[in-house]
Length: 486
Image (cartoon, rainbow, N blue to C red):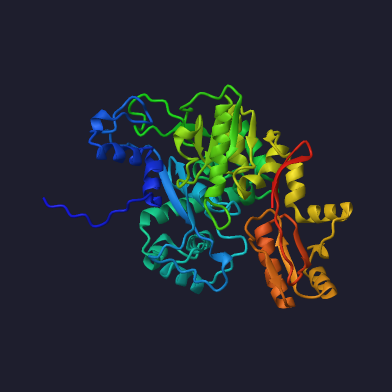
């Protein structure tokens, strides 16, 4: 046989990093050793410590990768997806079935997404859905969800237009069928069989609460499933599919399990929450912070537990921490891991906006948030509270008003004069922040900001032309700033 090299990438790529993280097989390490003339059977499997590198990885789980697009940060940009890479990051989810893995991955891409279901304000016509199925965009999966959930499109219809394989579409239909079962029940009538099946299909507690007929929330669903002993099992990625006994610290959670692969934590471990998918405004700088926090904890003799789902990062290398959970950064899953590990605390301040947004909810759940208290984080992130605090202490700021309804927002803009600045709370890198010069633009921007901000306040303020912005970062200890940079 003759072999020809058609491409050489002398660099780290997202594809090789994904393959390594998905299998637990250290591709770069093994490739480097091979280039030095060392044979596979002379290399120890760095994950298992009991087999050689010549063992092909065996997987008893499903990995799903979904790209992260930030196309909504740009006006007028095409949302069509083709052969050119337009994503800015990606997520990797792990489950025992594709349904479970897929729903986890969709939530990982954007915490505002509940899972595989239509977007809340989706009103696509059948013609719109046909167009997206034939010519894909970053919103295609939600068009498929609307078609399946509303019953207007069969698996065969979607396959005919999109050419997506029947196998995947049938799995998506399974998820929609699970949602239909939930919609036919209240929390009190939901059986242990149906609730367990919903969790095995990848439904989150919050997502289940949305579908049930009665007015319940995530906490109610969590209490119900725990009373039924429906809790996730912790499984390990050992590259062996449990064919040989091995103990690893590379873990994920699933509802398809009878027991944990690892013993429950004895306490004292600190959870460090990573930054999730790279996006505009949140990239490797936060991963450096998270890894630095983990290394510092270990150097001080503390047990460090990393939670993240980005395959491109150093923080998701299993040898950087004592335990690595390749899992969602959500209140539900972080609480599950905290209880499993009997954690001593959670660090949310080194992973960017996603873990920061969990601080208040985690604190309210009784979890110890280390560093800045959750109520202080809320005071700083909530633009209504922060602006009111500036007024109380006499710090000058442009005229502002918290959005209550469209009529009062338009009246405020008329009072202070255009242009006005629209700012949602708990966002990074200017997401949904816009300057409105007309009432029509203001209405559009307020709707967008409301979608991004959720139940958090949206603040409007007078936009000052020609102003200069000065930013200062500081570290305070006991109310005293000990380090600062302008």
